[in-house]
Amino acid sequence: MKKYFAILLIITGSVSIAQPLDPGEEEITRHERNATVQQQQPSYESIIVAAFKAGNATKIASYFAENVDLSILETENLYSKSQAEQILKNFFLKHKPSDFTIVHKGKSGQSEYFIGELTCEDALFRVTLNSKSVDSSKEISALTIEVN
Image (cartoon, rainbow, N blue to C red; front, side):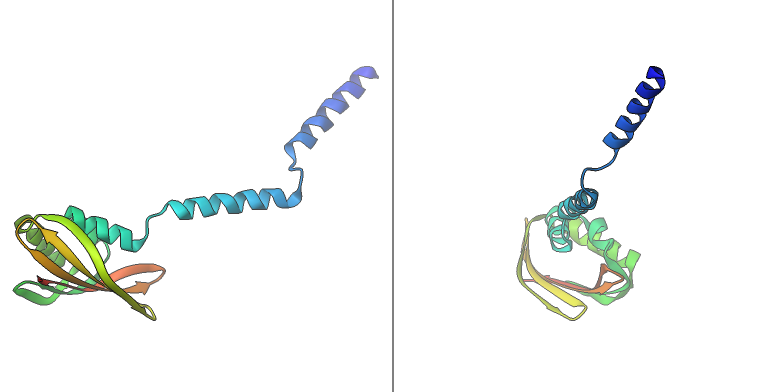
């Protein structure tokens, strides 16, 4: 009988240890974990700034809409996502960026725009970028780069 009693105590003790002390404690812990993950993700703005500083056309193009109104120096037209990426890559090959700063930004409804200065080894450029929110993500619909 003592053996059965000891086994019963061991089983009930291990079950009670596995349960949270407070029913709301598990929910709070889960909420805190989600908040931490969200805080670690860089913002759309910081990703775009870093991509321009690095001359990373692929990263910028990952935010392009299927068709992009692109105006880079003498080249101006409506291009597919892949064509626009190639034109931007060629621009970065000719003009190596060293810095990019946003000087003005605005938002209206689902649309957002940035106006920035792109410092390259050979010139200073003015960048205007228009984007819109589509299904909880951003898509660049227009990009203009002109000599400042």
